[in-house]
Length: 54
Figure (cartoon, rainbow, N blue to C red):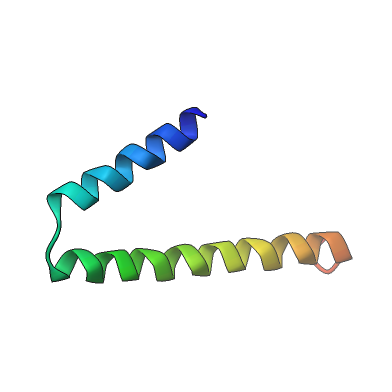
């Protein structure tokens, strides 16, 4: 629950401060970075599970 509160405050901070087009551009960049990290983490975990890495 604490993590959700921190992330929620983080989103509110960016949302309240930046309401212009650069804000949406930054959010798109952050979304792309987050998607890349999540995909990389998933591939890494899958590789560990199937014994490719370990």
